[in-house]
Length: 285
Length: 291
Figure 1 (cartoon, rainbow over the protein chains, first blue to last red):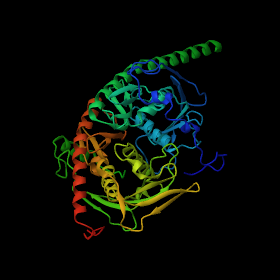
Figure 2 (spheres, rainbow over the protein chains, first blue to last red; figure 1 turned 60 degrees about the vertical axis):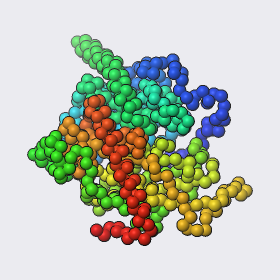
Figure 3 (cartoon, rainbow over the protein chains, first blue to last red; figure 1 turned 30 degrees about the vertical axis):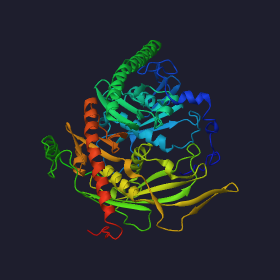
Figure 4 (cartoon, rainbow over the protein chains, first blue to last red; figure 1 turned 135 degrees about the vertical axis):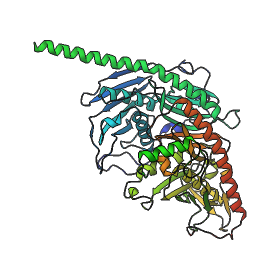
């Protein structure tokens, strides 16, 4: 891992103190298995309340902010520019996506440079958005998309995908439709939508060997709800096919439900822009 | 991946062939090309394998070293994948050209092996909190003729199957410092339990159908493909979508169903041939790169 010499880095090896907590303590015992009712009282297929707003960053061509429970993500999109270090002509424009956790967003401090997880997420973000953007409209150019997680309360990649699609449309990048994404967790045959950070940790650890069902894992799925298409599908864990089907179906319906929220947000921002224009014209007179 | 320029007519020809379940090399949709697999061909490694699948050629070397375990997983060893796309394969890989593909492959492999259902990393522990084995899996891509992911995963499985880790006879704490003693006999080794190692199955969506083991020409025709890592019992440890296209939910499920069946078969046949090779004993001739 290359180290940034110009920045003051922390000591090379540090260990978060949390791992020294007594794992046998009562508190963690109850958290190891997911109860039927979730800790925040949601139903297994219920999403958290969501807040979206466009036009957050004034310097960017388009930007969006999303809040899902504790998760807060800012995303900004910049003007198309020529693809750097590219020889030859590419018929299709490119999307450059960068996903970053801010240093203080997670339990463990993140370094300033992208780590492997963030690089992986950047690629997922790119693939989720690519099929929604009319890339033939800007050949030989690239559009930069930066997603920054301010606070990670789980499902931050799904939030970043939605924020990016809003930011892209706010930047008037031609698109086929909006992209919505939902994270699902599977733990012992049950699945939960829109995970919190705690649930993410539980779902990414294998259940004990003694339990009847060994399924666990996380599924991130991005949809184009206006076209009924899946633009990105990503699963880690260990799961059999029988459990995959209901999860995909549940996510697809949840993605459809999210679409009006985002459309409403875009309508609002358009109305606001129109009003501003009206006011300016009045002032000119 | 190395892009092969195809005209529209050629693409349509391939697409119609896939529709008719008769591909341009004579295979049906879910049929693999014949593969050559050989293990233990490099003396400097703890385990090695080479695969040739059509024109795809991959060489994998496994080395083990002693390391300290991660503080949050003190009872487990480590496993890491490094992929090197050699410029021999395509001039496009020269310099940093192959880096994005290399990270994509190594990430997908790391995801496939992340589950304890696939590999039990606890067996790699020497002294909890102090010492563990770290397995370096180095993958060299010598030639690419399509379907890199599957070829790499089969080679990795074979290389890990052939890996021999020296036996530790005693591991004690001496004044706060771990002190390990290796067995004097160089043949005194432990083998990894390869029973549950996953293989990757790439399903390339061409037209309305999915194709297994795509050649480079077929890869150019497809806008989206799904890479699944399947365990021998048919479970998935990771599912990753590749390419810039999108698919319908029903297509996705159908693809997963095909992938499961193909994965189970592929796992079984790889395991069978590895056992066959094992049965030939240590005196079998090594073919290496001479064909």
